[in-house]
Image (tube, rainbow, N blue to C red; front, side, top):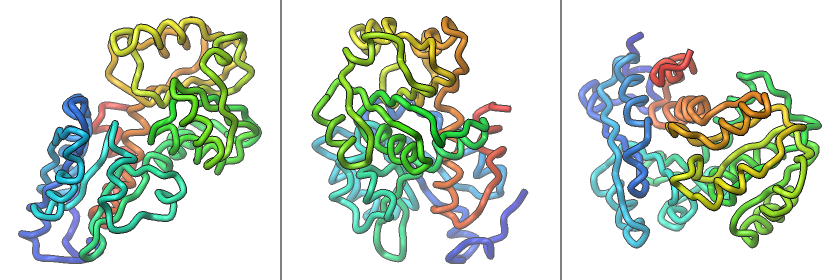
Length: 289
C-alpha cells in the first residue's frame, strides 16, 4: 500500500518525505518500548522510509532533549514515562485536549512551532470501542496519577462513566487529578478494603510485576475483583503480570496495553504525516490479530 507524496498535508519532494527521523523520548525504560518496531513496520507498509529511534534522557536534561528536536529537525516525537507532563513548558503550543488533560505523548511540527498532543486518551477510547465495551453508566477505578492516568480519567468522564475512582500511591496527586478532570480520589487502602464495587479497573501505573514494586504487587494481590467485568493494564511485555494473574483468578476479561499502543500510534502517525492508516496495520505490526 504505497502512499504518494500528494497524500501529505504539506507535500514536499519525495526525497524529503522518505528521509524523516522520528523518536520516542523517555528514561531507561524507553528501550523496552515496542514503538520503534511498530512504527518501522508501518512506515515500510505504506512506502515511507521513516526512521524511528529511542532516546533516553535524564529528568534534568529534558529541556535540552526538546531543544534537540528543533536543532536536529526531528520530524516528530513520542514522549513516554516519566516525562509526559514535565515536557510541556518546553513546547510552543498544546492541543485543546492536551491542555485539559495536562499531559502529552506526541509532539508534531505545525509550521515552525512544536505542538503537544495527547493521543493516549483517544487511543484508549478507540480500544474500548474495538472491544465493544460501553462506558456510559459504568463505574471505573483507575490506578495511577501520572500522565497516562490523566488521559484515562479524562476519557472515562468524556464517555460518561457513572463514576470514576482514582487510587494512587501519591494521594495528593490523585485528589488534584479528581478535582481537575472529574472523579473521586480514594486511598490504596480503601481500594483493598473489600470487594471493588466497580465494573472496570484500569492500571495506569508503571507497575505490572513484582520486580517493579513488591509493595504495590502485594496490594494488588489483596484486591477483590469479584464484581468487575473488565481489567485493562496499560503496560505490556511483563512475563509475570500481576494484573493478568488477578483477572485470570477472578475469571475477568483482561486486556493489556498493546492494543491501546496501536490505536494511539495510528492517531500519532496521522498527525506526523497527514496519512490515515487502518488500525489493522498497527495491530499487525505488534502481531495482534
